[in-house]
Image (cartoon, rainbow, N blue to C red; front, top):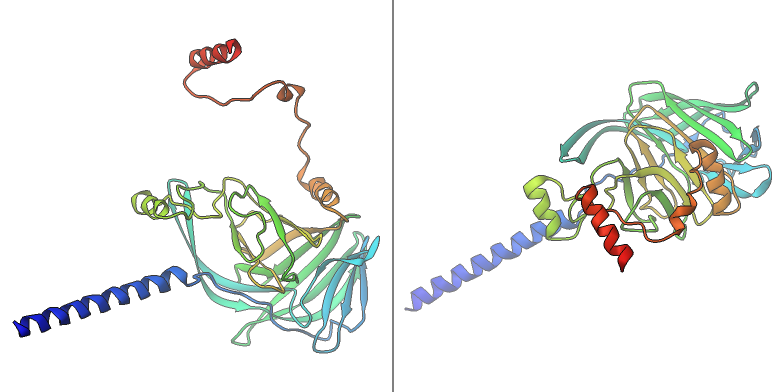
Length: 338
Protein backbone atom coordinates (compact mmCIF):
# COMPACT_ATOMS: atom_id res chain seq x y z
CA UNK A 1 0.00 0.00 0.00
CA UNK A 2 2.82 2.36 0.87
CA UNK A 3 4.44 1.65 -2.51
CA UNK A 4 1.19 2.44 -4.34
CA UNK A 5 0.78 5.66 -2.39
CA UNK A 6 4.30 6.75 -3.29
CA UNK A 7 3.71 5.93 -6.96
CA UNK A 8 0.48 7.93 -6.93
CA UNK A 9 2.24 10.89 -5.29
CA UNK A 10 5.02 10.65 -7.88
CA UNK A 11 2.51 10.67 -10.75
CA UNK A 12 0.74 13.66 -9.22
CA UNK A 13 4.01 15.60 -9.05
CA UNK A 14 4.84 14.72 -12.67
CA UNK A 15 1.39 15.78 -13.88
CA UNK A 16 1.59 18.98 -11.85
CA UNK A 17 5.02 19.74 -13.27
CA UNK A 18 3.80 19.14 -16.82
CA UNK A 19 0.83 21.46 -16.25
CA UNK A 20 3.15 24.20 -14.96
CA UNK A 21 5.46 23.67 -17.95
CA UNK A 22 2.56 23.90 -20.42
CA UNK A 23 1.30 27.08 -18.73
CA UNK A 24 4.78 28.65 -18.85
CA UNK A 25 5.24 27.77 -22.53
CA UNK A 26 1.77 29.07 -23.41
CA UNK A 27 2.44 32.27 -21.44
CA UNK A 28 5.69 32.81 -23.31
CA UNK A 29 4.04 32.55 -26.71
CA UNK A 30 1.04 34.60 -25.55
CA UNK A 31 3.01 37.46 -23.99
CA UNK A 32 6.00 37.69 -26.31
CA UNK A 33 5.97 40.38 -28.98
CA UNK A 34 6.30 38.65 -32.37
CA UNK A 35 6.74 41.93 -34.23
CA UNK A 36 10.24 43.30 -34.85
CA UNK A 37 11.41 46.55 -33.30
CA UNK A 38 13.26 48.77 -35.77
CA UNK A 39 15.17 51.84 -34.71
CA UNK A 40 16.92 54.70 -36.50
CA UNK A 41 20.64 54.34 -37.02
CA UNK A 42 23.35 56.98 -36.85
CA UNK A 43 23.47 59.93 -39.24
CA UNK A 44 26.76 61.26 -40.58
CA UNK A 45 28.50 62.46 -43.72
CA UNK A 46 30.09 65.53 -45.24
CA UNK A 47 26.77 66.71 -46.65
CA UNK A 48 25.13 67.32 -43.28
CA UNK A 49 26.68 70.61 -42.23
CA UNK A 50 26.27 72.01 -38.75
CA UNK A 51 23.91 75.02 -38.37
CA UNK A 52 22.99 74.97 -42.08
CA UNK A 53 19.49 76.01 -43.17
CA UNK A 54 17.85 75.11 -46.49
CA UNK A 55 14.57 76.25 -48.00
CA UNK A 56 11.90 74.54 -50.08
CA UNK A 57 8.99 76.84 -50.79
CA UNK A 58 7.36 77.86 -47.50
CA UNK A 59 9.35 75.25 -45.58
CA UNK A 60 12.86 75.22 -44.13
CA UNK A 61 15.16 72.35 -43.16
CA UNK A 62 17.61 73.12 -40.36
CA UNK A 63 20.66 71.15 -39.24
CA UNK A 64 21.18 71.64 -35.51
CA UNK A 65 23.21 69.98 -32.74
CA UNK A 66 26.89 69.17 -32.32
CA UNK A 67 28.98 66.76 -34.38
CA UNK A 68 27.62 63.60 -32.74
CA UNK A 69 24.02 64.75 -32.29
CA UNK A 70 23.04 66.41 -35.54
CA UNK A 71 19.33 66.79 -36.03
CA UNK A 72 17.20 67.62 -39.07
CA UNK A 73 14.24 69.89 -38.28
CA UNK A 74 11.53 70.82 -40.79
CA UNK A 75 9.62 74.02 -40.07
CA UNK A 76 7.14 76.26 -41.84
CA UNK A 77 8.34 79.81 -42.47
CA UNK A 78 5.01 81.17 -41.24
CA UNK A 79 5.61 79.68 -37.78
CA UNK A 80 9.34 79.11 -37.19
CA UNK A 81 8.83 78.01 -33.57
CA UNK A 82 6.73 75.00 -34.57
CA UNK A 83 8.33 71.74 -35.72
CA UNK A 84 6.60 70.06 -38.65
CA UNK A 85 8.87 67.00 -38.53
CA UNK A 86 12.24 66.30 -36.91
CA UNK A 87 14.71 63.49 -36.41
CA UNK A 88 15.99 62.18 -33.09
CA UNK A 89 19.31 63.98 -32.39
CA UNK A 90 22.17 61.95 -33.85
CA UNK A 91 19.82 59.48 -35.55
CA UNK A 92 18.81 58.87 -39.15
CA UNK A 93 15.79 60.27 -40.97
CA UNK A 94 15.23 57.19 -43.12
CA UNK A 95 16.43 53.67 -43.84
CA UNK A 96 16.04 50.75 -46.20
CA UNK A 97 15.94 46.98 -46.10
CA UNK A 98 14.91 43.71 -47.65
CA UNK A 99 12.31 41.23 -46.42
CA UNK A 100 10.47 38.10 -47.42
CA UNK A 101 6.73 38.45 -47.08
CA UNK A 102 4.10 35.72 -46.84
CA UNK A 103 0.43 36.71 -46.94
CA UNK A 104 -2.26 34.26 -45.87
CA UNK A 105 -5.91 34.99 -46.68
CA UNK A 106 -9.08 33.43 -45.27
CA UNK A 107 -12.57 34.82 -45.89
CA UNK A 108 -11.26 38.33 -46.43
CA UNK A 109 -8.94 38.29 -43.40
CA UNK A 110 -5.20 38.59 -43.98
CA UNK A 111 -2.19 37.49 -41.98
CA UNK A 112 1.06 39.14 -43.07
CA UNK A 113 4.31 37.43 -42.04
CA UNK A 114 7.58 39.27 -42.60
CA UNK A 115 11.08 37.84 -42.40
CA UNK A 116 13.63 40.65 -42.49
CA UNK A 117 16.79 39.66 -44.33
CA UNK A 118 18.54 42.99 -43.94
CA UNK A 119 17.82 46.31 -42.25
CA UNK A 120 20.04 49.26 -43.19
CA UNK A 121 19.39 52.31 -41.02
CA UNK A 122 22.77 54.06 -40.62
CA UNK A 123 22.45 57.07 -42.92
CA UNK A 124 25.33 58.80 -44.67
CA UNK A 125 24.52 62.19 -46.21
CA UNK A 126 26.74 63.08 -49.16
CA UNK A 127 24.95 66.27 -50.17
CA UNK A 128 21.97 68.52 -49.47
CA UNK A 129 21.11 70.93 -52.27
CA UNK A 130 18.35 73.39 -53.10
CA UNK A 131 16.70 73.08 -56.52
CA UNK A 132 14.50 75.45 -58.50
CA UNK A 133 11.78 74.92 -61.12
CA UNK A 134 10.18 73.43 -59.16
CA UNK A 135 11.36 74.32 -55.68
CA UNK A 136 12.80 71.26 -54.00
CA UNK A 137 15.43 70.10 -51.57
CA UNK A 138 17.50 67.10 -52.62
CA UNK A 139 19.35 64.88 -50.13
CA UNK A 140 21.67 62.21 -51.51
CA UNK A 141 23.75 59.55 -49.82
CA UNK A 142 23.66 55.91 -48.79
CA UNK A 143 22.24 53.65 -46.11
CA UNK A 144 24.82 51.41 -44.44
CA UNK A 145 23.87 47.78 -43.77
CA UNK A 146 25.16 45.51 -40.95
CA UNK A 147 27.54 43.77 -43.40
CA UNK A 148 28.95 47.21 -44.38
CA UNK A 149 27.32 47.10 -47.81
CA UNK A 150 25.55 50.28 -48.90
CA UNK A 151 22.27 51.19 -50.54
CA UNK A 152 22.26 54.49 -52.43
CA UNK A 153 19.28 56.74 -51.79
CA UNK A 154 17.75 60.04 -52.78
CA UNK A 155 15.33 62.04 -50.62
CA UNK A 156 13.27 64.80 -52.24
CA UNK A 157 11.40 67.45 -50.27
CA UNK A 158 8.95 69.24 -52.56
CA UNK A 159 6.43 71.88 -51.39
CA UNK A 160 2.94 71.16 -52.72
CA UNK A 161 1.33 74.23 -51.11
CA UNK A 162 2.17 76.63 -48.25
CA UNK A 163 0.97 73.98 -45.77
CA UNK A 164 2.00 70.74 -47.55
CA UNK A 165 5.46 69.25 -48.05
CA UNK A 166 6.07 66.06 -50.03
CA UNK A 167 8.75 63.71 -48.67
CA UNK A 168 9.95 61.05 -51.08
CA UNK A 169 12.59 58.47 -50.12
CA UNK A 170 13.91 56.37 -53.01
CA UNK A 171 16.39 53.51 -52.56
CA UNK A 172 18.26 52.47 -55.69
CA UNK A 173 19.66 49.04 -54.84
CA UNK A 174 17.87 45.74 -54.29
CA UNK A 175 15.52 46.62 -51.46
CA UNK A 176 11.81 46.23 -50.82
CA UNK A 177 11.42 48.06 -47.52
CA UNK A 178 11.73 51.77 -46.76
CA UNK A 179 11.62 53.35 -43.30
CA UNK A 180 10.98 56.86 -42.01
CA UNK A 181 11.86 57.77 -38.41
CA UNK A 182 10.08 60.95 -37.20
CA UNK A 183 10.95 62.03 -33.66
CA UNK A 184 8.21 61.78 -31.05
CA UNK A 185 7.78 62.05 -27.28
CA UNK A 186 6.23 59.89 -24.59
CA UNK A 187 3.30 62.27 -24.11
CA UNK A 188 2.45 62.66 -27.80
CA UNK A 189 -0.93 61.20 -28.72
CA UNK A 190 -1.48 59.73 -32.21
CA UNK A 191 -4.97 59.88 -33.68
CA UNK A 192 -6.59 58.97 -36.99
CA UNK A 193 -5.58 56.03 -39.22
CA UNK A 194 -9.01 55.80 -40.81
CA UNK A 195 -11.79 53.74 -39.24
CA UNK A 196 -10.38 52.35 -35.98
CA UNK A 197 -12.64 50.77 -33.36
CA UNK A 198 -10.55 49.65 -30.40
CA UNK A 199 -8.28 52.52 -29.39
CA UNK A 200 -8.47 56.27 -29.87
CA UNK A 201 -4.85 57.11 -29.03
CA UNK A 202 -2.44 54.84 -30.91
CA UNK A 203 0.72 55.84 -29.01
CA UNK A 204 2.41 52.70 -27.67
CA UNK A 205 0.97 50.48 -30.42
CA UNK A 206 2.05 48.94 -33.71
CA UNK A 207 -0.62 49.46 -36.38
CA UNK A 208 -0.58 47.70 -39.78
CA UNK A 209 -2.50 49.43 -42.57
CA UNK A 210 -4.32 46.90 -44.74
CA UNK A 211 -7.99 46.80 -45.79
CA UNK A 212 -9.62 43.55 -44.68
CA UNK A 213 -12.57 42.00 -42.87
CA UNK A 214 -12.88 43.20 -39.29
CA UNK A 215 -13.07 39.66 -37.95
CA UNK A 216 -15.14 37.86 -35.34
CA UNK A 217 -13.85 38.59 -31.88
CA UNK A 218 -11.06 41.00 -32.84
CA UNK A 219 -8.84 39.87 -29.96
CA UNK A 220 -11.54 39.07 -27.39
CA UNK A 221 -11.19 35.49 -26.14
CA UNK A 222 -12.21 32.74 -26.51
CA UNK A 223 -14.31 33.81 -29.50
CA UNK A 224 -11.30 35.04 -31.54
CA UNK A 225 -9.41 31.75 -31.16
CA UNK A 226 -12.55 29.81 -32.05
CA UNK A 227 -13.11 31.88 -35.19
CA UNK A 228 -9.46 31.46 -36.18
CA UNK A 229 -9.54 27.68 -35.71
CA UNK A 230 -12.77 27.21 -37.67
CA UNK A 231 -12.41 29.86 -40.39
CA UNK A 232 -9.21 31.87 -39.91
CA UNK A 233 -11.43 34.92 -39.42
CA UNK A 234 -10.90 36.00 -35.81
CA UNK A 235 -9.32 39.33 -36.66
CA UNK A 236 -7.39 41.55 -34.26
CA UNK A 237 -7.82 44.88 -32.47
CA UNK A 238 -6.57 46.76 -35.55
CA UNK A 239 -8.40 44.94 -38.37
CA UNK A 240 -10.54 47.43 -40.27
CA UNK A 241 -12.49 47.88 -43.49
CA UNK A 242 -11.07 51.37 -43.89
CA UNK A 243 -7.55 51.76 -42.53
CA UNK A 244 -5.86 54.93 -43.79
CA UNK A 245 -2.12 55.76 -43.43
CA UNK A 246 -2.69 59.21 -41.95
CA UNK A 247 -2.37 60.63 -38.46
CA UNK A 248 -2.64 63.87 -36.51
CA UNK A 249 -0.90 64.11 -33.15
CA UNK A 250 -1.45 66.10 -29.98
CA UNK A 251 1.72 68.06 -30.88
CA UNK A 252 0.08 69.15 -34.17
CA UNK A 253 2.24 66.86 -36.31
CA UNK A 254 0.52 65.26 -39.28
CA UNK A 255 1.60 62.85 -42.03
CA UNK A 256 -0.13 61.02 -44.87
CA UNK A 257 1.47 58.17 -46.80
CA UNK A 258 0.74 58.14 -50.52
CA UNK A 259 1.95 54.58 -51.06
CA UNK A 260 -0.53 51.89 -52.01
CA UNK A 261 1.75 49.16 -50.65
CA UNK A 262 1.36 47.50 -47.25
CA UNK A 263 2.59 49.78 -44.47
CA UNK A 264 3.08 49.70 -40.71
CA UNK A 265 3.09 52.56 -38.19
CA UNK A 266 5.03 51.57 -35.08
CA UNK A 267 4.46 53.99 -32.19
CA UNK A 268 5.72 51.75 -29.37
CA UNK A 269 8.85 53.78 -28.60
CA UNK A 270 8.76 56.99 -26.57
CA UNK A 271 11.11 59.14 -28.64
CA UNK A 272 10.47 58.10 -32.24
CA UNK A 273 7.97 56.55 -34.63
CA UNK A 274 8.80 53.94 -37.28
CA UNK A 275 6.92 54.15 -40.57
CA UNK A 276 7.57 51.07 -42.72
CA UNK A 277 6.47 50.65 -46.34
CA UNK A 278 6.79 47.44 -48.35
CA UNK A 279 8.43 49.22 -51.28
CA UNK A 280 11.84 50.65 -52.25
CA UNK A 281 10.07 54.02 -52.43
CA UNK A 282 8.26 55.84 -49.64
CA UNK A 283 6.19 58.90 -50.52
CA UNK A 284 4.12 60.99 -48.16
CA UNK A 285 3.15 64.50 -47.19
CA UNK A 286 3.70 66.30 -43.89
CA UNK A 287 1.44 69.18 -42.97
CA UNK A 288 1.63 72.48 -41.17
CA UNK A 289 -1.27 73.69 -39.07
CA UNK A 290 -1.85 75.39 -35.74
CA UNK A 291 -4.80 73.17 -34.83
CA UNK A 292 -6.53 69.97 -36.02
CA UNK A 293 -8.92 71.92 -38.25
CA UNK A 294 -6.04 73.50 -40.18
CA UNK A 295 -4.29 70.12 -40.48
CA UNK A 296 -7.45 68.44 -41.79
CA UNK A 297 -7.88 71.31 -44.24
CA UNK A 298 -4.31 70.79 -45.47
CA UNK A 299 -4.61 67.03 -45.96
CA UNK A 300 -7.96 67.31 -47.74
CA UNK A 301 -6.37 69.64 -50.29
CA UNK A 302 -4.74 66.42 -51.51
CA UNK A 303 -7.37 63.77 -50.71
CA UNK A 304 -10.44 65.81 -51.62
CA UNK A 305 -13.29 66.94 -49.39
CA UNK A 306 -16.62 65.24 -48.85
CA UNK A 307 -19.68 67.10 -50.10
CA UNK A 308 -22.05 68.53 -47.51
CA UNK A 309 -24.76 66.06 -46.47
CA UNK A 310 -28.33 66.72 -47.71
CA UNK A 311 -30.88 68.39 -45.43
CA UNK A 312 -33.11 65.31 -45.29
CA UNK A 313 -30.70 63.53 -42.94
CA UNK A 314 -31.97 65.87 -40.19
CA UNK A 315 -35.63 64.88 -40.72
CA UNK A 316 -36.08 61.73 -38.67
CA UNK A 317 -34.31 58.43 -38.06
CA UNK A 318 -32.24 56.66 -40.72
CA UNK A 319 -32.74 52.89 -40.56
CA UNK A 320 -30.97 50.19 -42.55
CA UNK A 321 -33.02 47.03 -43.20
CA UNK A 322 -33.02 43.75 -45.12
CA UNK A 323 -35.77 41.57 -46.52
CA UNK A 324 -36.90 43.21 -49.72
CA UNK A 325 -39.00 46.20 -50.74
CA UNK A 326 -42.35 44.96 -49.40
CA UNK A 327 -40.93 44.15 -45.97
CA UNK A 328 -39.27 47.55 -45.77
CA UNK A 329 -42.53 49.30 -46.74
CA UNK A 330 -44.45 47.31 -44.12
CA UNK A 331 -41.99 48.27 -41.39
CA UNK A 332 -41.99 51.88 -42.57
CA UNK A 333 -45.79 52.03 -42.29
CA UNK A 334 -45.60 50.59 -38.76
CA UNK A 335 -43.10 53.27 -37.79
CA UNK A 336 -45.19 56.05 -39.36
CA UNK A 337 -48.35 54.81 -37.64
CA UNK A 338 -46.66 54.71 -34.26
